[in-house]
Structures are given as C-alpha cells and as structure tokens.
View 1: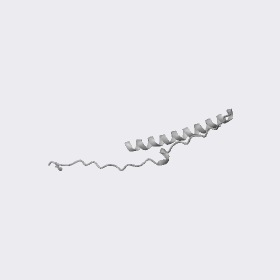
View 2 (view 1 turned 45 degrees about the vertical axis):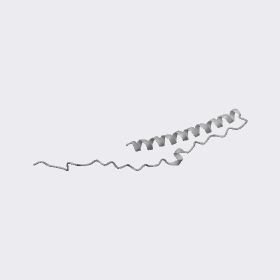
View 3 (view 1 turned 30 degrees about the horizontal axis):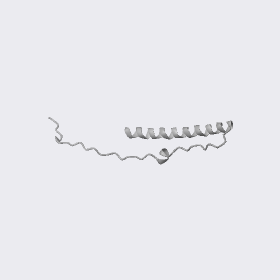
View 4 (view 1 turned 60 degrees about the horizontal axis):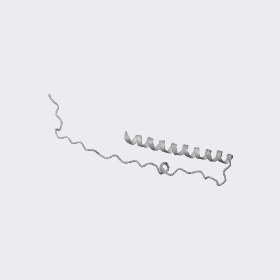
Length: 73
C-alpha cells in the first residue's frame, strides 16, 4: 500500500514581526564636559568620565548586536 499526499502543496512565507530596538540603546552617548582650564588632576577625572562613557556605549552596542543575532536565527 502506498501513502499519497496532496500533489499540489504550496509554500507560503509569513513575515515575522520586527522587534524594535529599545531607544535607550540607540541614544547618543553622553560627552564629558571639558573645562576651559584643565589641570593634570582635572585631566585624570576627565579621562575617567570619558572611559566610563565609552564603556557604557560599548555595552549598548553589544546589546544591539545580541538583538540582531536573535533576529537572524
């Protein structure tokens, strides 16, 4: 006995809903305020603020890459 199925099946593609990226991940990164008179001690504090800002931006970009990787699956 042979099993027979429909001979004219049709493949239908259904678009997946797009999940928006959270706005806090795409917001501009804050820039540290650079004073007019910069001392050596002030430069160290400014560098610390700048490095924290860069680290936060890198965290946001990593989160965006993770979201995009989930979409690609």
